[in-house]
Image (cartoon, rainbow, N blue to C red; front, top):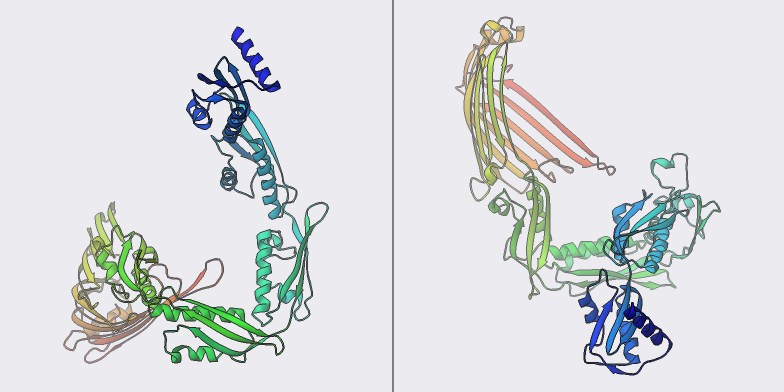
Length: 636
């Protein structure tokens, strides 16, 4: 009790008058609960053995307040001992959000954390009040002008507190009217065609276009500027944009004041800078712009055209900018395309990532860009498309990475996300016909080799079938493919009498393919087939006539020529491109049946441009005819 009284007297004396300097023999810290004493000694600018003065008092106070850990600091002396009494600010033990639906809790908590308000952080009311205002501002930018935020605190043990942020989001204000002032050349309807914000209609709830958002308004203003710039009005400007809210905070009125200016034509086009390409390559595009109405969108496309041309020639980091020089008197524009090609870059390494199953070799053989050659955008993109067409990957991405310490080398990294290309199925069961068992294996990327393997066994009391096939798309390094297949099927319904006719068959085949371009192949398939037909108990007239004419056992050797063209953007679930197969099959003279067959198979895909929907078409046309001694084409 005596010591407390002494401290009290000392503190009182410090707050009323200065004390004499003294040599510090001890430093005592009072009042700490959560903050470590070591951090205090690190922060204060004095230590045992230093001379204490009134100036030091101010320095200690300033240093400790700068840590933002304390609400109150008092400094006193007890003899030659320095006494520092601290009142800690509480820390935040938890944060609870209530009432927010329009803005996600994760986003709000990230915003609070960015302002230093998070679990474990020191509670600062001033910062929290500022954040409260920021939350209200965010809701206002979304058109929720009636939003309010209240903060409740609850004391917890060890000088901590729980925060509860209660949000009333209010109703989203709807756009009542959009006024455009100053447009004499185009109507409001024409200008607002591309607007994301629209005046409220009875069907507006389907799109929410009548709900105000600051970000959407900024986007619409940019669209308005593009509308005029793409039609040659280079001096177009937004004079002002005003947003007003009704008293009930439910209606929004938007007013845009514009100045249209005059329309400009292009009278001359020049390409300046270090253009490393032959003028004959790009000159037709340049000449096509002369005497045309200026269009910013068209200029951007030409810039991209130049960049692509240069990128295909190895100038990966080329920059091209189109700059208009305006002649206000004649209302014309001289276009200057400034070309900065930079150094021609070469591919040092081609790297692959994400292919945990597929061998690197399978990816590398699809490359059209090679290591050591200059990096061509077309070849890199072509390599990416070929990987997508394999059908082994959900997604393929490519990145061009500059090599540190060089100006003319890049590494090209392809990152793939693999998807399942195999299926394994087995079955076992019992029915009135007896026991049946089956095993089927199919893999389009067998053991990551890129080869296709199919194996199947199915056996029951009335049917027995086996089939094995193997296809290697790169039998040779040049992309010549080769495949084999063998099958056997035997059926005996016997007393069950459930089929109009039965076929027992066995055969084998070999297939070859040769690439004639990146999208086209030709192939030759040869197959031998032995078929035995049982007419059953009640065959149709067609079957009876065929068997009477041609017999019921056939050994047939078939040759098939195939031409295919594939421009699909991916092998699995394509969204763009087409696939065409033309097949002509002929049985070799001397076979028990002689006939020919031709087929056209077509697939076509195009995105519809909304809701990620894709139009797809899949069709096949075929014709079969007999020749030689065969009078009727086989019905099977």
